[in-house]
Amino acid sequence: MAEPSQAATPSSPMLSSSAAPEKKTDEAREKIILISYPKIVFLYPVFVLSIVAAIWESFLSKPLAADTPNPQAVFIATLFLGLLAVNLVVLGFDFPRTTWLTLFFFVAAAVLGFILLVRLNPDILPFVARILKAFHPLANATFYWSIAFILGAIFVAVFIVVRFDYWEVRPNELLHHHGFLGNLERRSAPSLRLDKEIDDVFEYWLLRSGRLILHPSEEQRSIILDNVPFINKKEEAITRMLGALQVELRPERTDR
Image (cartoon, rainbow, N blue to C red; front, side, top):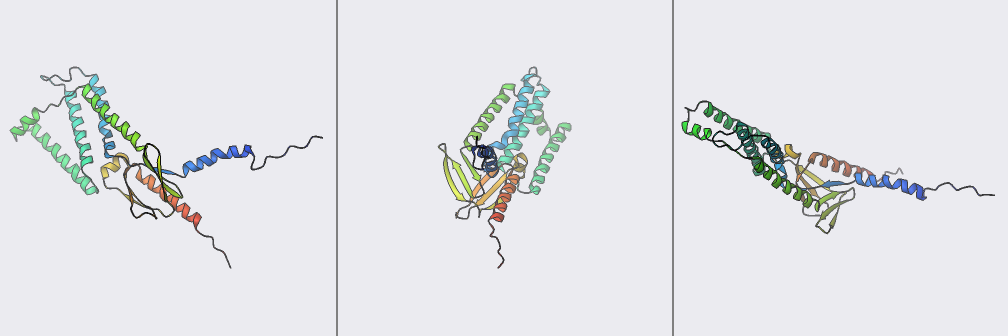
């Protein structure tokens, strides 16, 4: 008589293989990657405008005619220079408060108003009017493609380099991955303290970035990560993870 087939036990390969993807998914959710980017990434508006300007210039006829400048070419070049100037100001200065931001927009509006006033009424300041009248910045599509290529190559290099130097926050430990050979440093994470700073309003607008300061319990020196994108979401995720861990580690009360 044939023996009845045995039921699958929890340790059977069938159940263990089905639980493996779920375990891997839980592990992926229980880690937060922190990457500190250099400030060059904030030049991405110039990169985007360079591509748009290059495509636009490709359809213009005689964009570099000195005797009769193409109005569209002059407009594109002026817009490019203006955005480049604003982007360089963002890289060169910090605007920690909205008052500084308001002052910046006030100065920019005052300068633009002065230029329009002199252009519409050249008799007020004839010398300045002659300079503005002779100001016809021109560039062809090759120039804009070159700027886009240079910035694009730098961005690709940055994204490759940061993949070899980043931090990983887990419920029980803080990992530092660095070096092309995969060097790894481990620190204790349950008592990790976290500070968030937003030093520049413009940088926060561009990439929602800011500074994260990590204070491991076993380290005397703090870990400072500048230009962390989407800093609010990262900070909330880390706080939620460590808060849940503290609740799980809280000792149970026993009634005597």
